[in-house]
Image 1: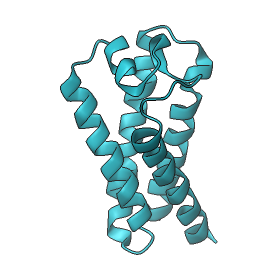
Image 2: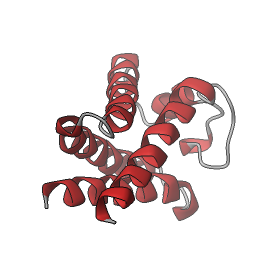
Image 3: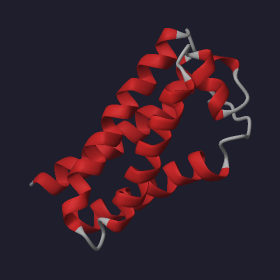
Length: 124
């Protein structure tokens, strides 16, 4: 039962990250930080250099793939979930930094909770 829950959360987080970073990066959403209309624009609104955009993108895409692959390769799960959780803490901090309304932090908060749950379930 707990293994199934972990697999479901891994798929949700992994596919969610891949959706945001590979399919919807250039699209406007109601959750983009700092009033930006793209993922790259969010990082600019936060005052972060483009190297951070690429670094975070690499970590999120790699983490998303690792969480999905972790269904078959369990050793990938805890490190990937931990990195994603840490990145989500950073995302929440950036939303606060630019004074975004709480609504814009909801996706990061949900991803943080699910990633932390995945790590905890796989440490037990």
